[in-house]
Image (tube, rainbow, N blue to C red):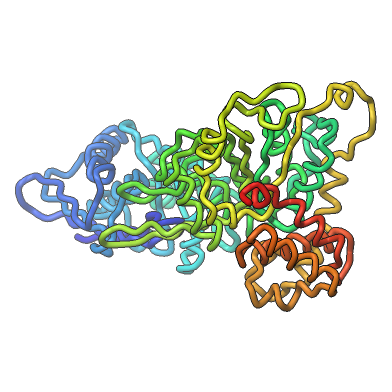
Length: 509
């Protein structure tokens, strides 16, 4: 008798429907699995055998063949354990095959029959909705995660016997009701806040502009000037993610296994800060079976690269595609996987190897050759793709001691939200949502500027030998400055401020 159990696996960030077909035929005892299973799937034979025996069933002593269809898609992960076990029980006629219709089953089995949580349940649940499968049976530990998908019934199971009794009609499984999305509430009192920072008015202004237009930014300053402190507070002034953004982010974190126990949805902006020793596969993604890297884990959030020149050159240059396209494509011989990677890049670096070039209190010990070699680790094409370059000078002790009011993150976030509302209205019906994503055609349409602004911009382009890409990015930043002020026409002051955020272009001349 042949039994079919619908399940799914993950390919990239999406689910792929898999039919587990089980046939038990007379012959010498054997347990064969076909359909391009990876090592973790092949090992499921022993887990399934032990789980069925320890659940009180007699494992069949005949020839068992398990086919994972379609056969041309590689299957990996432990989520196929439960559907294989259910398929064997159905082929043994312990469960009616008709009861399996309209159910998608996924889960990992322990040797005693308990069901463990697995990665990637959210993409599988979304696939079930697309395939019009009404019910999904998942590990109880994944129930909250699957319940954020609308219009499907989510059942959670703790043991193989629970699923068996459910299909026999003897008992029910735990039902997880749809979790209606709610934006995160007010920040916790312990969360990093911009009001903690004394001084650094220009840097805070630049970060506000970056947040308002989703611009990439690099900060240059000596050790202890507050670059890391500023970067870690950037998420606190970004607008709250909507439902679609939260689901996109949660899918990636689910696949990477970063969702905590019982956590359903990532409702805050991700902040990723990898160490400078990271490999290109760790940053961009990769592996034999491609997995998302840090740029994808930072999707819809912030990627912070501290000590920017200390990253390997080829690793830094690999950022060009995701910065430009908002996606990462990882190609293998037989397939290619695309991961989303639309993030805000925040980089920090010292002005020289010792870190004290230009410091009024400490002398720099670096030679001109050392400084040039240090800065040349960041290529010109990559710098061109960073909209804002700012200097973060040393903090005056008097600024730290002075008790004065600093705008908290909530106040800054409200200003950022108003600017984002203007941009959403401007790009209504488009796939872009922020000024940083404008194309050349969009810049011509939305970045109108007066004669004095044009004259100033042309003088800067000629003096600093700016590239066309840098020219366009200055206009994008100026457009964001205008949005923060609620102004339509870009004027000379807006261009002047935007030019002030290109300090590394000036130093290269």
